[in-house]
Amino acid sequence: MTQARVLFVDDEPRILDGLRRSLRSKRGEWDMSFVTSGAEALDLLAESPYDVVVSDMRMPGMDGAELLTHVSQRHPEVARVVLSGHTEREAAIRVAVAGHRFLTKPSDTESVIAVIDQLTFRTSTMHGVETRRLAGAVRSLPTLPAHIERLTALSGAADVEFADVAAVASRDIGITAKLLQLSNSAFFGARARVTSVDSAISALGLPTIHALVNAGQLLWSAEQWGPAVERDLDVIWRHAVATAHLVGAMASPANRPYAQAAAMLQDVGRLVRLTATGMIPNQAVDLSATDCQGVSCREVGVELLHLWGLPYPIVAAVAERDLEHRPPSSGLGVTAAVRAAHLLIQQTEARQPGVDAHDDELAELLNHLQLTAQPTDWRRLADEAAAQAGQSPAC
Image (cartoon, rainbow, N blue to C red; front, side, top):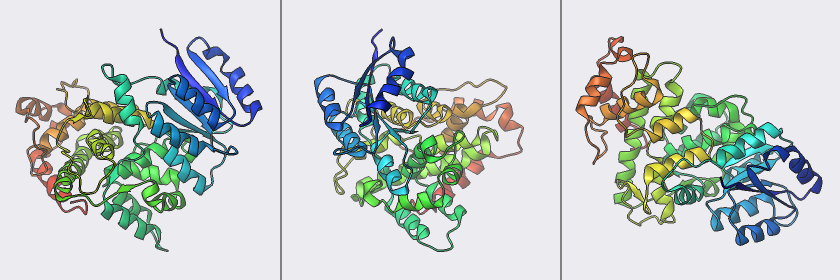
């Protein structure tokens, strides 16, 4: 079995010595290198491949943010972990741009091992390297300009309401993904798994949200695209918002936050196609296509959510959205609930083109005990969800 290669970067030799000692038990699984500067790290990366880079943020000369930016550009297949003891909001912005995962400094050995073990696993079995390369290059997903403008206005208001910020953020795919990535990190104060935009904003706090929103194009890819791309984006956003609204009623209370997040993020892989064009505003990009440079867009999206450390039930539901589901009578679970909501929305005006109907499977899902136990006309509710999504500022 090939060892995973991990590169640690910190200008303090004592920190590196401490890491070397504490990670001695992993020497049989990891090939570890330890260097004291960004320049040394880039030289090693140019000589041979690595799977993960773990870097301190504050270093003389080339700091961690600059190093990891270079890594993202030259070696996007390398997972990037920020290890920092500084949590000022300005530093938080640079961290949010530079890394996939974030650890506080000092960090306990178990946390370091857990993060690196997760990042050495690749979700794609057939196109692991290429899928990691495409996903690893993504700094943020495209966001809708109207949503960034609304959040900017809200964050600048003296009497901003938590619920108003959550209402806008939760209707944007890119913002949802980024907030879940950051809030599921001890660096940003998370004490438990964060599964919804509401809980993400609560974990991060409105001052940090304000700083993130005001980062502008440093963090958010909000562009004015050509008419063809805007139409494709409209379809993706409307389907996501409608599915998230519907699955909120279909999923069990325990699974609801996971299911709604997965519904919003179900097509993140297709949005990666926009980042792959270099965000040229008027360049035509067929977002209905399922291929991203020879790899399934869904595989790329799943790998991205895994890199960003989103909870497993969300990642699994996105990965399995297009698979046929036969859930046990005990409950739909997250994946089957998202699948059922997606198939129902496919029979509304918020449908996605080019996706089969699967009428027999949908009928069986609608006959599940979890859904028949409620006196609900699910098809009518799906139509209402689609109409509500059509009134969203996203459309």
